[in-house]
Length: 187
Image (cartoon, rainbow, N blue to C red; front, side, top):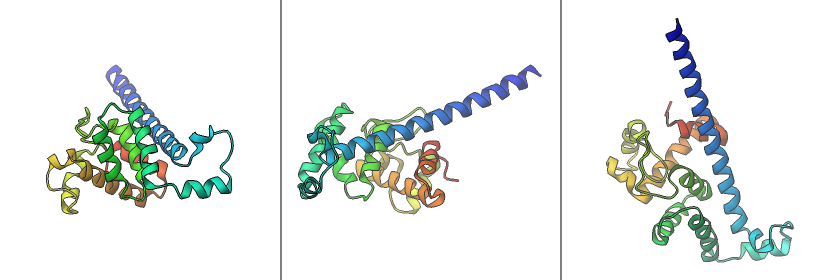
């Protein structure tokens, strides 16, 4: 009887820890998105004290892509110890996706922009892709050819974008999709 109580307690604690991790990841991603928007819309230059006027918005929209890249790379550098070349490669690979800010925020949370990381749950690369769960489907979709490809920046970002898109289509809400992403379960 006491073994069942301990087992029940362990299951509850495990679920609580998973929920807490999902909540932390979600809030960290949201914070990252806000910081990226903050630095790319010119609020940082204004001190963030006042809303952007229509004149400022026009000048911000006419900023060169290089200026926006610089602002995002500064944010990435402040949040990672990776070399500038790696961060620039990550930015360039993510910028081809319409949800690049979200992908970069997930990379910050999952790997701290380290493309060679492997988690204790066997999640690989920038976006924390679990090969045990996704490798076969990613191969079938021709996103990658082998497990090693998950350490390649472009391939890992493409894999993470695919996984996230699948969850978004199924759930319809970003919060629920991110919770599923953290859990790594395709079903």
